[in-house]
Image (cartoon, rainbow, N blue to C red; front, side, top):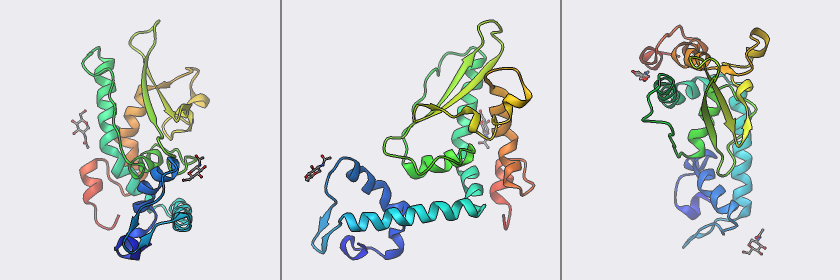
Length: 203
Ligand SMILES: *[C@@H]1O[C@H](CO)[C@@H](O)[C@H](O)[C@H]1NC(C)=O
Ligand SMILES: *[C@@H]1O[C@H](CO)[C@@H](O)[C@H](O)[C@H]1NC(C)=O
């Protein structure tokens, strides 16, 4: 396949080609040809196998989680910022939509602690909802949906919530605390902020 697309074999490790190939595969469009030949289903199967191997390797080594936490922090921080502004009653950003590659979505899922989530399927979607309590308008909660399934209580910031609280929803504060503090604690390098965590040697 490297010969066909005229690149180095190293460049073709799972994460790079799977993104483009999955789209063609899911639409039943044939893989591209060059003057050196055509990419075919056998290539796709090998790439898919690499990807599954890489996934299980990442689960074993903690290194990937560190990468995921740092990589996902900016978008989660932005999301928390928007939710807080909306919770304060500001109405200018009631809906935000981002579109990204599956290789961007994957570390976000890992950072949230959704370890069950496999490599994102084609057109996967992740939704962050902010809820307000009608009886107590000062109380806000979050709900996280992945491909339409409520995964709020699988996230690392709300998985113990039921055990500790009678409140049926996950408080916004849990998500805020996670992004502002616990994501760095999870890195385990003693950092307490993003800058520090990104510049720490050997971690
Ligand atoms: C996919 O395309 C091939 C030919 O290009 C066709 O034979 C096959 O029926 C298609 N499969 C589906 C599920 O549409
Ligand atoms: C997180 O977002 C806030 C604004 O909501 C911003 O002031 C802060 O610098 C951001 N933190 C990082 C580490 O990006």
